[in-house]
Amino acid sequence: MFKKNFVKPIIFILALASLLVFGYAYSNGFCAYGNGYGPGMMYGNGNGSGNGYGPGNGYGPGMMYGNGNGQSSYQTIPTNQLKSFSDLTGNVTVDDKNNSITFNDQNAVIPIIASPNDNAMYSFGVGNLINPAIIVRKNANITLKLVNNDDDMYHGIIITNTAPPYPYTVMMNISLAFQYSAIRPLPYEDKQNKLLATGSTEFSANTPGTYYYVCQVPGHAQQGMYGKFIVLDK
Ligand SMILES: [Cu+2]
Image: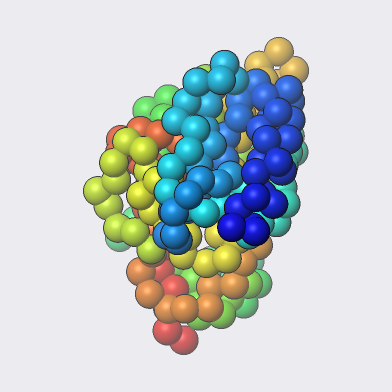
C-alpha cells in the first residue's frame, strides 16, 4: 500500500515528462509480481490512449523504464556511425552456420541493431546475423547496447525468462531475466538530422540458462523480433 501510493505521483510525472519529450508515454513493465497498477504498465502513443495499467505493483526502479537504471532519455549517434556502433569487439566467436555469436569476455559488450535492414524490420541484428543466439559466460558483466535503425517504429529490448511464442502485448506477459536486462523502446531515425537513437544497460549474467531477448513494443515479438540469450554454466 505504501509503495503503491508513493509511486503513483512519480509515475504521473514521468508519464507527463514522457509525453512532453517524446510524445510517447511508454514504460515496459514486468508483471511477475502482485497486482494493482504501476509504472511498468503504462503505454500510450502520446494521445492519452493506450492500455494504461495492468497487473504488477510497479515498485522498484526496474519498473519505470525497463532497464532499471533510471534511464529516462536516450542518446543519439549520427546515422553514418551505425557501423562503428554495432561492430563486434573483444573476444567474439561468430558461428554463421548455427546463427549464434559467443561473447567470450568477462566484460562483454553486445551491440544490437533493431531493424537492421528493410528485409528485417521486426528483427535484431548482431554482427551480420539476424536474431542470432547470443551466448555469454556465466557471471559475465554484460553491456547491452541498442541502436534503432528503423525509420518509422520504436524498438526496445528485454531479456526475459519467458519463451516464445509471444502474444501481442508482450510486456504484460513476460518477466525480466536479470536485474537491469532491458532497454526502453527507442525512437526511430531522425531523418532530418540524420540521427539514430541509442540506449544501453549493464547487468550481470549471473544465472546459467536459456533466456530470450525480445522487443517489448506490442506486436513486434509476436512477429518474430526475438532471439535466444544463453548463459553458459562456466
Ligand atoms: Cu520492435
